[in-house]
Image (tube, rainbow, N blue to C red; front, side):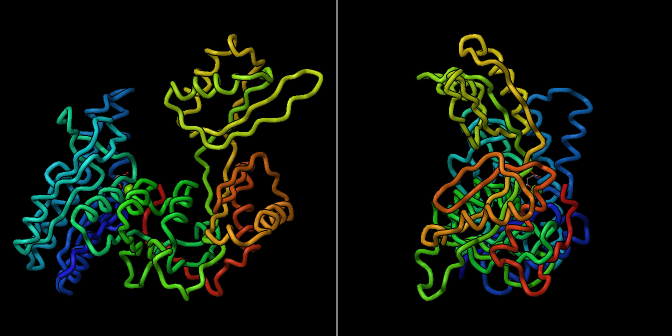
Length: 423
Ligand code: ASP
Ligand code: MG
């Protein structure tokens, strides 16, 4: 008998009907002869609504209380789901993250999983029950307080539990049929990928593809846990995320896995930095001290007559003001002339493991952008990715043009977005 971990996102359990539909799927998996563990997110937009509520009573709610509040969302869905499964004649037991043995550090709102000790889940399975676990939460090893893993964290709960239980597969159910070559909301002819490698999925998640949480993919790769991303609204096979190096040798891997985009970053330019040893270090140390994650960096060649250079980089919108404040504090010591802040930017990334062995991908990417009239303001690359920063208003055009240039369009429209508000 195999162990299957299934994760259902908020849009799959948005209302009582959804809960009942998901319960039926869970029972079907059990009847097919599996031991079934389910990880569930909060219903619909519950998490957003709880955040709104917190902001109405306090401008800066303490992290501990915020986590206590938000974990309630998943408790509601886990209990309802257990009841609905019970109603279909199968025993289901719900567990909070803490009861399921999800041990984390103490960082409220962005806790990291340190260990998973799923003794109670194992017992439930051994006794023939279906275990239903609240996603996105755990308990701190040190403070003993309830923690959350960050928005979208239920995916990570599911993969972590699957790894700890040595499951055969971790199925992640959402409102789309799998991983597409671009966001179907922008490119209606986007094609569903049957398979994708961990490394490609990591790059896609890091570049704004919202289908999976980045940390869940990192976890899956570390434990070599196959993920099957699929829709809870259809019975279609979705996308398998696996270590393709061990895969079928005869299967030709696509050169390009897909095009991802991200509107969540802002660009900061430090103008007039003296071109001498140690200045860049000082700037990025100040940002590191303020716990700010930097993404792309570009440093211009200094003009010969001034010996001054400009350094631009991108940061998450949410960290923009903190970054500006940190830099303002070191303006006199570094001696730069001014700071510019631009949040009207977007990042478009082309991802594919086949880039390693196929020359000309960059040229084709940039040509397609030029033909679409899109100006590039920053570039960064990895072995299997090329990313550009463009004007935010041109993101959709850039994604569509790139998708077309690389022949990623499907013959028919296959992308169906079944539910969700996209909030
Ligand atoms: N309910 C949480 C959120 O909306 C966790 C999750 O859905 O994975 O972020
Ligand atoms: Mg969610």
